[in-house]
Image 1: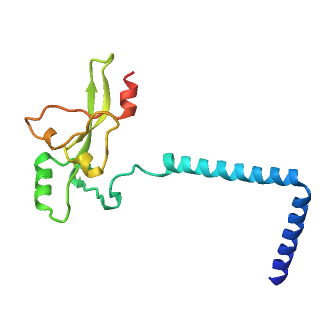
Image 2 (image 1 turned 90 degrees about the horizontal axis):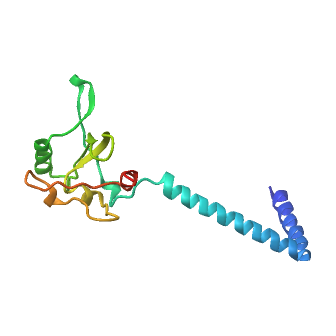
Length: 164
């Protein structure tokens, strides 16, 4: 082990003497290493931000997903009804807030050929609970809940861009 350390130190001395004699080579080696390390760090940051990291929600470590199943119907994830969501939000005291969301298919007409899209139906508190902010316009809030509320739509950028 000690021999390996001595050999390594000797190799470092030899390399440093060689680099001090060839200044052009030294500059080239240092610049190449700096560019390689910088490019690697930039690519890692980009891949991490775009692919590896999920959407960032406020307090995401405190978010939970509640679902119900109907084994008799062979369904693992049954949508809660509005009365069930109301019951949960009033009776469960260990959760600070509810952000209800479900996915259902909608048919869009009036923009060329009718097409079916998967759409999310969210309660007015959903976006606040998730800590999300709009890029443009506004998100739903408590005034958008209830039978007398005016209809409101929140579009993702990808869907808005596909409308063309």
